[in-house]
Length: 69
Ligand SMILES: [Zn+2]
Image (tube, rainbow, N blue to C red; front, side, top):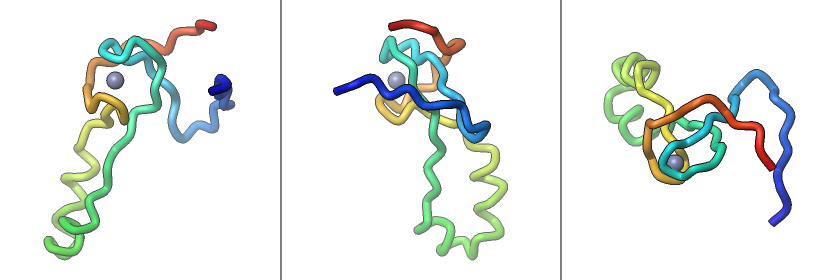
């Protein structure tokens, strides 16, 4: 697969995942089931406090993004 060189849009910046040994874009998962179940309002603070996780290993061990080839 070709290297995906995305420009930073300001929305999500890549971080270096210590577990995957590569740059990833941390993601938060929005759980619609919980959102609907808790009538939304209660879930929002929970979602906002949630830490972004690595989409590959679900880890939270991030370092600064590394400029590599
Ligand atoms: Zn990872």
